[in-house]
Amino acid sequence: MTRDEVMALSDEELRAQAILTMGRANGTRLLGFCPTKKRPLKTVLDEAGEPDYPHDIAAAWKLVKQLERDGFKTSVHTGMIDPRTGDVLDDSSAAIWNHDDIYWVGTAGPGESPLAITRAFVLAMTQEKP
Image (cartoon, rainbow, N blue to C red; front, side):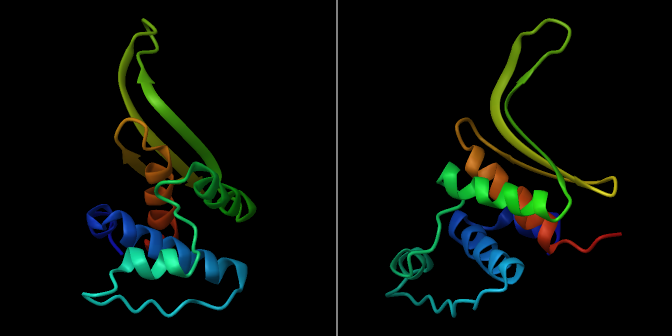
């Protein structure tokens, strides 16, 4: 997937992609996601008891730990601060992964660290490495 494709995914599509990727990483059986008009993706995932990575910080932190096991350097930030003045520039969230000097950055709005973590995880796991 390209960065633009990942950034365009809904929260539930990101959740599904992270679940599929974690399944591969952990060697577990992958779920057969079968959303329909009557059974949207969120319902299918909730009924299956799957983690809500984009909305639950404890679940999202498992993505961080998986990346660390895979040799990534990880960094999660909440709010951007001007290093010269110490002033808070904004309260956005960002997750940054580094592996072999290749960086993946996931961003989200205020209070959305789990979403930023999930975006960065899906970016790192789905984009082809140069």
